[in-house]
Image (tube, rainbow, N blue to C red):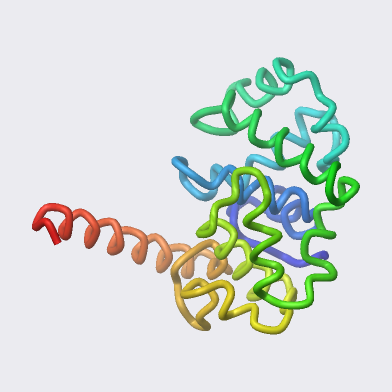
Amino acid sequence: MDVTLHLAQDPEADALLGRSPLAALVGMLLDQQVPMEWAFKGPATIAQRLGSDDLDAHEIAAHEPEAFAALLSQKPAVHRYPGSMAKRIQQLCQYLVEHYDGDAEAVWKDAGTGRELLKRLAELPGFGKQKAQIFLALLGKQLGVRPTGWREAAGSYGEPDSFRSVADITGPESLVKVRAHKQETKAAAKASKATGK
């Protein structure tokens, strides 16, 4: 895996996301309750604070929890909730060590079908169905991971030429379109809640 992603809108952080399967998974995990660029810049910040240019699942899994939380809490914090996200990242890495010998790419490398890949992603700690579908769409649309039926398994996120999620961000223009879509979705949800529908 060595592609150019534009999720952090920061060349170094995006380069890490494009070459490191673990960094991409950690960025996806962090992508909640903070701006997307902040979330996807997180893996590069963590690697830097660990004194590395990459992330290692074995190292993170074995890291002393309080020290790892402190690492994420340093200013600027990696996330709005650095303590709880530190715990989630360690749980993800522990799962990867236990089930995939620490190799994040093994989650998707030999998946025979989109459905199987979605199941594997949804089993990762911190990944619900929606997050798993978005990451599956990112794998298919930008990272060339396309097992049979991947678009169907990714649901609406797999649709070509849609601007629903990080899977569709390839630069500043598409970022604006995805943001607009998210705002429309939020506004629609708020409106239907207000009318009781």
